[in-house]
Image (cartoon, rainbow, N blue to C red):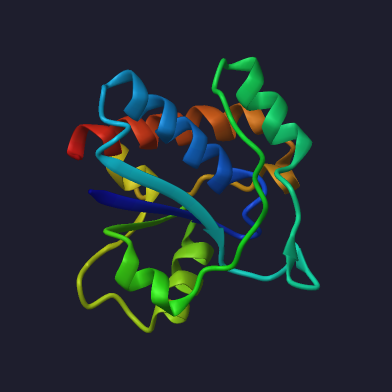
Amino acid sequence: MQKILFLCHGNICRSPMAEFIMKQLLAEAGKADQVEVASAAVTGDEIIGGVGNPMDPRAQRELAKNGVPFSQHRARLLTREDYDKYDYLIAMDSENFMAMNQICGGDPERKQYKLLQFAGSYADIDDPWYTNDFDLAFQEISRGCRGLLGQL
């Protein structure tokens, strides 16, 4: 079974959106039982007293608007051990990528990517927490996830 971990700053917007979009794409392709998908944060900003905050309501609305099913989600922090557990560690932007690389102690097995690399681009997916453009984030994440699905 392949394992994918999506990463963003706080694990309340982009990476959980990617997690649920990817799960839907895998289910539609009949591969849901072949790939494990999760998400995590590269900072502890959304984890208070050891408890992660839930997914941003705006991200939930965007998923619902686009017919993507989701379940309850709480932010969690990326750990060094995640590097050994997952086959793909996929960041949403360059800042997340650098933080992921630092937390994991490098990338000797070449498992670390930016999501839009799977769509032929090295562009960042801007954080909708700041831009408030959840529609654009959804579209870009979907494009990256479809590209990733094509490579699995």
